[in-house]
Image 1: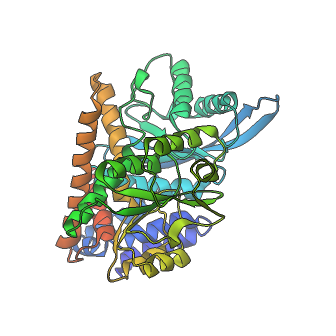
Image 2: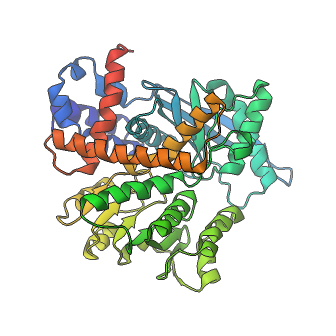
Length: 449
């Protein structure tokens, strides 16, 4: 490996040994960049990589809120504004009890390259809190969101930082956040948050967009492999917006999702999550706040595997779509043993580095990285920003067509980047290089700071 790349990776590991998720994603990205860095010795002179792995700014804040019983609670809020070289910071807000600085930084770092891949003028950022919304009432969540925004509103804006939703933050939470932002600012800046309700500036198909985009990317992979998506079986994880979107688009194109998962285990539905009733039930499950996938098994009489993950199920395609580090080496070996041909990451960094290397070494497996596959969500958020700035409302068909074109372009650019760097059909390295090059060019042109 290039000595400059090695030194940056080792420096991050030493400095941030207590932030494993961040170290993992830095190593995964930078280790793909050797052919580019070798051609550009000037990167080392200005320490481009050293600057790129440090957030431009990151801050924490106290979030104090009152529950329905009159008790007060204190959580920690975060915003990581990682890289704004190509546009305002853009990235979701996550409410989950395991949120910490390492997760915020790895998500912000990944978001920088993901946003670059879209070709749209948006930088990378991420935020959230260790608040757990599970089992909380609407009133409690509203009060938490209002307190969170009271600390955050000074540091975001349509041309500064545009947050969106993420795990634990859906349309309800975005509404409460935007309402508090509007109250505090005294004006309607509808480009400041994306994922808004359609009645106040949101975009059609935004909730489904990440899942739709993942399936569009998958179509490209299958086409280049001489295959059709019709009749294919898919193993997914989670049951939130992303998996819901995958289920909807897969059915439309003739495929079927046969697994869902949650903190309590996974369900196997050999008939597929294919009917409107089943797909609509995912929305009800999310809204219930129970966070239990067993509800699906009880409703539709299918298998439930308590405390297990779905990666031992024999399918054509695996699409991990729940959360980071969901697939470890043990699960990766099960996937390979089932002769799965297509491993399409959807969640942010759902595979450990060890497991990812193992899967990429399988001669009959095609691996696609999350930063490319799941870029449809942020791409549609950027389209929402465009609609807001132009005071326009696009039809669902217009948004879907643009999303489809963006995902086709991301796939093509990833393949092209790998090929011109003599890496063959390596979608992981290609996505890293294509995302890196645009950010690197912008940083070099803007000077050293």
